[in-house]
Length: 231
Image (tube, rainbow, N blue to C red):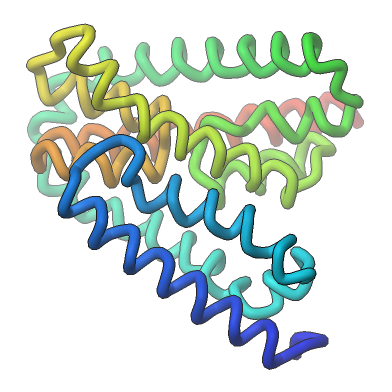
């Protein structure tokens, strides 16, 4: 659909790309948590959109196609997973158990957050899939009665937070195993965590990719089952 304000939509697209490119350059220079491109881009747009007296609909009119690239990007994670198939075959019981435990813990934390913040039932359902990458999360949200757009926001916040504190947590826990680091980042910060894991090593990134995809598939299957039980 053609944007209602095409020039404004184009301006927001160019601004988003410019902010992200600048953030990446800044991150390569400082390599600090506060220079994360995801964090800086998100915060910058959060400030700039209201300052420009614009709105989310206009912004989305120019940048919606960027979100559409998440699907192919997620599928592309299959390539490094294939490269690390021997490692995955060796540790598949641990991977499966970790994904199951991580998914259950994620839902429990989401339920606790929704209760503490007095979320409405719809908001609560939108929060549940926050710990899987956006394409999977939006499908799961729709199946259980949430709002996919709200879920996408929760996913972005979770990914930014996880990718930002992940390296510090790895140092705190003294994780030297690429398997452990990758699993933690893939489960805790999905796509953003995978990107961070690849900065550590190919093995970290491959494990993170595998965990992220397995968690996404599991959550979609559970969501479909819940939707069927609900009616």
